[in-house]
Image (cartoon, rainbow, N blue to C red):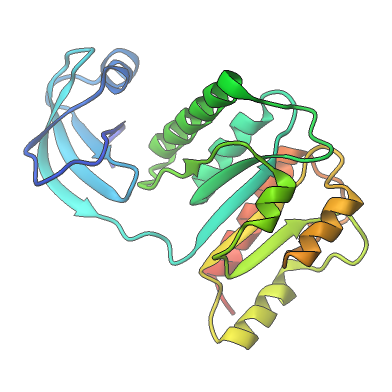
Length: 252
């Protein structure tokens, strides 16, 4: 795979060349130091990739000549990560790791124990920042699909209005939480297939409250243990997505 990857929004028709945005042009030419003639993979974040050659190294409007095009199939499953907002810059890391693992969608949540509260312009800027982090991670890891980062939502209303999922899971430190493997096995036994759309809820520092866990259970979420140790938010999200992705890729 060429060393250079660049994002280009979805196109119409069959273009023979792509002109990159000023941000992508600057990153490709000024930061990564690509030069005319260098091979570049451009992608639209929705599964289309173009094998290209850098034709013009203008730092605000680089041009790529397309040599070939391919459309990659999505994963046979789609995982949504609904993450209660952590403190500091941890959400940036969570978004990046979720992209690397292949999450399809990321939903930031405000829960009872969330210590970070965003509204108005501050919320919009954070969403834009996290979407940029997802794009950067996709470029670095070769993911042709960039997950969508949704607006920040209250955890309770999100739990109550999350239809369309085959399976809804919530990471839990509370008694009675199950291991992931038997929950997936039960789904396969009941439906004759693996779940195609799965929702993972991960709590903030201190986990979801008992009231939130009860509310989640009433709305169809299965409480899942991530082991005997208390994990940091970013560790819990990465671990949860990793084990679920592995199990869905390797049904047994």
